[in-house]
Length: 140
Image 1 (cartoon, rainbow, N blue to C red):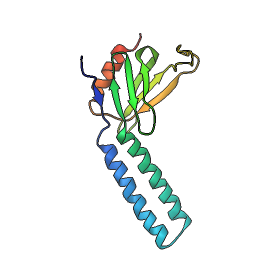
Image 2: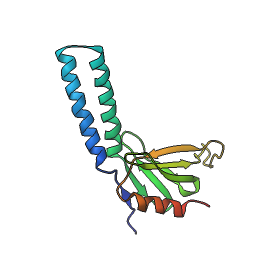
Image 3: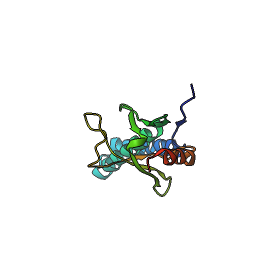
């Protein structure tokens, strides 16, 4: 059986997650030392920043024979079939990720073509390879 290609996020997300955690620790120290609302606000912002980038750091994408599976922490895997996909493009400025527009599957297992959905994926190593593979397998 052929091995399923797995794509991991770029290392820059680890750097951002660690940086956000470091800033959060510094603001936590400031809040404990001398409480102020602006310090608390920036503490919460830094924690949010670190959590978002930690989530993106821990994501992984698997390219299967019939679609792509997105594994994110604390969520069940999301599998999107090639027949559901509408477009896939690079999106973003600093570290462009993939923007995948697809038709969701309804409760009865049919593709619901009334309301498309968008899934933003983090930038991955070998992104050009993944983008090419998705575009060649997407319907017309």
